[in-house]
Length: 239
Image 1: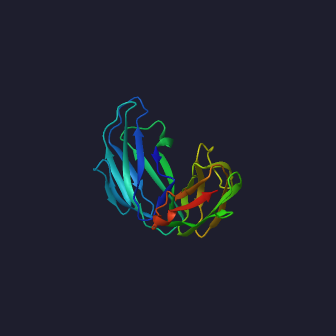
Image 2: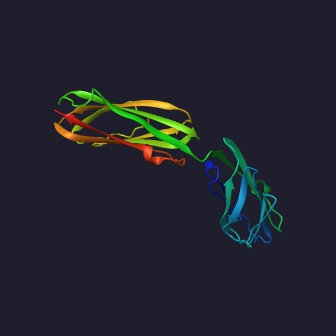
Image 3: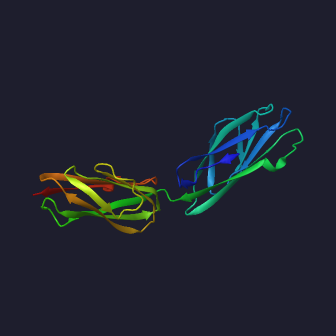
């Protein structure tokens, strides 16, 4: 079998994981695995430290495998191609003995390569109405986020940590887990490069107080060149 991450980023290494198993009754000898790397990546090395690479083709001489034995190893690569692009990698294996089922001697893995940076920004954090807010009334936190790219932000999350003096009512943020206490945790999925979104969190001003801080944090699996703008806070007064 051959597996690879669903997503990769230009300039950031990732691994192909390969497993060769002997499902036959006899010992397999002279096992050779051949992995033709896609042109969009270049070879960095392998966990066996015995494979050879030439012209993008990786050749690995594997140890003999008795019945039901297997060997698992990785081939490390680094993407270089502008994005987005889907890269397919196919590996095949052969041995000295006749194979009774050669259909499973080849496997393919697909990885989508993205640019390696997505600059997510919390552009604005305000309340409606503005502070001070009357106790017992309902108000909203207004959150504006942007992705100024160049890449899409993958597996993005948005977390809102509310002050203890307010009670959560609802939110327009998608993909939120059930709210327990003051923490609102939401999975935004992919935030497209160049996109802008406005979300609200509606709460009740339950308890009077000053300096009541709400903190919003934005995160993505895609590297961010300026993560300092991924967090914002606002203080309110409840009278």
